[in-house]
Image (tube, rainbow, N blue to C red; front, side, top):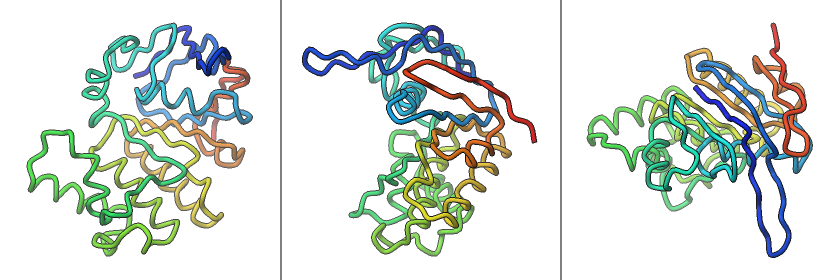
Length: 226
């Protein structure tokens, strides 16, 4: 599904240049559940941004579903990303002015989805995540756990092939964090490829594979067995 070949990413701030990724080689197969770990500043979030087509490599190749997307235009990347990749963020990124239903529907804005089908998809995913009774509420009217469930619903409503999660339990207490981890395992069991950035060794251990980064390089790439 994914193949990174000697991918590097440079960030320029004035005269200071930082190499966030340094010659990454990484293959991820369809249906895998990969945890990306490592200390702060090691390149985890940058790697996730590149995988999600939100950022482009400075050098190297990124093959996504048979296409080398390195160097593609933003419009072309947007078309490829739409409906194929879902994102879960630590900060939820819900829009307060919109209801739960409207927030989830944002993920279908750029797809050619008829109104009736759109409503069906939103209703189904809210039911699946256990927040259908909150469809008309604003984010501030929800608990942290409910907000993260809505964020996951938004990521899943377009039925993406790849789900990227950046510290998805970082703003949650232990109980709600465990709920999110259970959801991610089920999402993966249903066939979605999951790549999760986490600082938690116990959460990383729930994935089928761990990729540990250090200074923008892959330090350890290990399969895990139950």
